[in-house]
Image 1 (cartoon, rainbow, N blue to C red):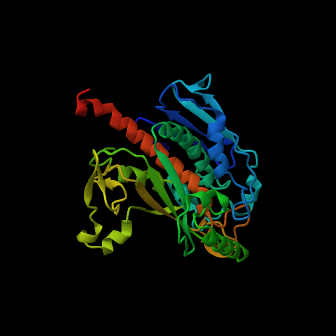
Image 2 (cartoon, one colour; image 1 turned 60 degrees about the horizontal axis):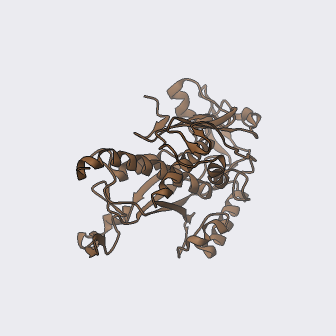
Image 3 (cartoon, helix red, strand yellow; image 1 turned 120 degrees about the vertical axis):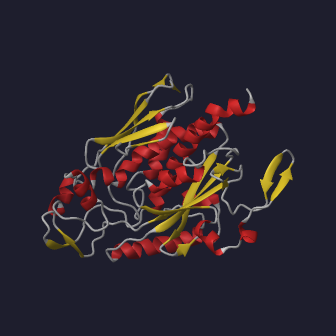
Length: 360
């Protein structure tokens, strides 16, 4: 089956290309009677849109969302929602000069080999522009989750080896790299500026905190909560690694160090540490869920690179145009969106059989 859809009960299907008429998403499984407006969605799209600062692509897109179906008199109807975002600043001519060349690091070669045809206008479906549709869907999911007391916050933990040394969530939206450490943010910005001036790009690490999640979400063995979150986040273009809790570091720990000891907090069972990142056996523990993703440096750089043409001739390519020197800051709302979509789907699955477990 084509991989353009995600979810089991709360499902999303994105469509559209970077330099086509627009992009959008069909959402099914939206609970009815949720208060929802275009502005609720627009708030999140504005966080992702291009042209926000000098460390992002200069492409100017207003990304104004249109709700085409699924909402009546300000409330969701429970029927499929269709959201559409027109492309207002498409410039396919920017790609004419190298439309027959495979850009290193891009999906040009793999798409061409898979389909025998590819949309060379800014990578088509493989473009980061597709993520605007995910953010729109995530805004809907987030609205439902907030009503359940579940909050999702992501931020840039590291850029090109420069790490945030303190986590102050109030600082995230105050700087252009969305770092929780304002001092580290200044150094991150300087590093991005340097890379851009050298015709290069840099990567980073984004961390996610989920608070208010109830215990019991996730379905062994193939639909474990961490497995579904990995699927969701690794499906974002540019994400090359995923970990939960201590992640890779756990391989360097002993069981006596890694295991989270339990204690009774009234009627609630808690853990004294959270090395597992809020998930055990693929099921949420009720502690905060802690995730991280590794974001690669953007592939479009102005430095000369070796490549071949579609007819197999060796060439040299320099990719000019409107591109991000680092996508980590703009990927933050995308990461939050995919976590929201996954958690709402898991919550709906959980509630579909919760009555059987508790005899209600």
